[in-house]
Amino acid sequence: MNRIDRLSAILIQLQGKKIVKAAEIAERFNISLRTVYRDVRALQEAGVPVGAEAGTGYYLVEGYHLPPVMFSREEAAALLTGEKLMANLSDHSNRKEFSNAMQKIKAVLRGSEKDFLESLEDNIAVVSRRPPVGEEFPNRFLSDIQHSLGKQLILQLDYFALHNETHTKRDVEPIGIIFMNGYWHLIAWCRLRHGYRDFRMDRIKNVGVSADNYDKQRHITLKEYMDRYGEYETQAHMVKIRFPKTHARRIGDQKYYYGLVEEQLINDECIEMTFLAPCLDWFGRWLLIWGSIPEIVTPVALTEKMQELALEIKAHYL
Image (spheres, rainbow, N blue to C red):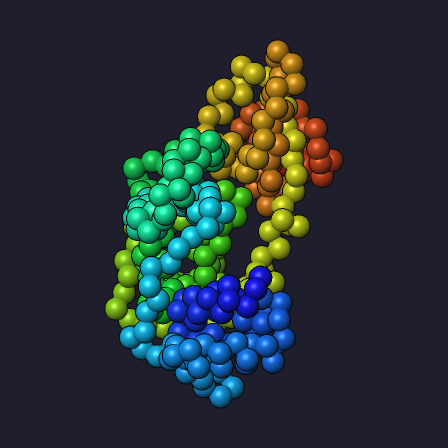
């Protein structure tokens, strides 16, 4: 990147945040701190009102705005891809807001870029395997949760816990959101349970944003939570189960709630399903519903767990 393009990009970066550290600029453009200082000084000499706070970073003086930004063809294509992803992987609230933002972005594109996007529109698709969400769980709270995170406001949740099929009301202090295994998760300090909890957003029945603030300094960061509690991929068990085709159809949407990631037709009579199961005991108790019909391909630990559960049931009824 030549210096003129870099200066323009630094100016856009400064407009995007309240304070930008010199180290952030250096890392983004792979330049030294000395070069950052020279570039900022060049912007100041060109009349751009860049202020500096010792030990904090740089900022643009309040009221200064760039003229409309022009996008390259590659940037426009990346934004279109983002719109497709948002349409399938976000919730109703964010989907609408992103669509509105894209309309504004398209309005400032040059004619050639607009033509390019129109030709590309029908050639990008994102397919989601998530089951449809019932009316009880409207899946439209992501914007409210983002607002709560930005303003440090307490959230009031009406939440359905799948493991024990109970509805509870929770007052929570959000620390972040994660998109994982096809679902959005709210990570928050739960005042009811007095601990950090993972709330899957498609199980939230209703959300209220309180006027009361919480002190985010009292909590760990989202990264610290993920490092401490969130070893999701390493903790999950890869499970492969084979069902006769006639019974596979009866499972319906249940398979999604138990972590289905893939279905494969083995032959005319058999389907193999692959799951990521966070807990073999929980998964095994669901598998008991189907009696001797399913065949466990892997892991051996699940077969042993099913033997334990079968003996547990036998002992109970004896």
